[in-house]
Image (cartoon, rainbow, N blue to C red):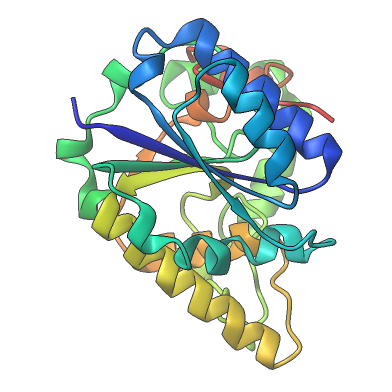
Amino acid sequence: MPNLGFISIATGEKYREYWFDLIQSFRATFANFDGLKFYLLTDDPESVIKFASKINLNIEVFEIPPYGWPEATLLRYKEILKLEFYFKEDILIYLDADMLVRHDFESNLRPESWKNGIALVAHPGFWRPSGIPLIEYYLNNLLNFASDVMTFLRTGGLGSWEVRKQSKAFVARKARKIYVCGGTWMGKRVQFMKMVKTCSENVDYDLDRGLIAKWHDESHLNKWSSENEATILNPSYCFDPTYSNLKQLPEFIRAVRK
């Protein structure tokens, strides 16, 4: 199995606490925890280093400004891109700080089969099962069926797509197929960084023109996904137990409800 590097961003005490919980969840579930490498971008490296030293965590910590909203999420590509030459692992995985690992998923990853060396995760709110489970889901959720039909008619696909043509995150109606989440994404190191570079440049393009994409960094990730082939993983990697459309799936990574 290729070695894994996990990248997260945590500014502000609240999100550092979320990230501490994330690391403890890795520690409790991953058999290969000591073999994992973590990278954290934070505005308080001292507190993170103190935490990491207590559990002998294999980590590199980088200081970034205490960004407000939405810069804290929108500028993540730019901040990650700055660290390109620090990353040595075969596979890089971005995880939001407010996630919890529920199952050791290392053996479930199949990077040798990832299209373009990238694996993105279908957004749990907009993913739908297929076949008989889809029929059962709609029979039990008639309002969601009606809502989904109206959304398809109105926008062409489920998701919070950027529809303004002025934005670099704009996705044409015919390309609005699978909407991916911004909380978990991964890839082989070289391809991962190429994607990050493209998204960073597109964010800069928008900001130079006074534009902020509808769903910030996630909008730009979906723009990339609409124009490039990638393996799309199901929402097991960004699971929300309150969503009935996910009940057939195993839970690998849980998105924390705030």
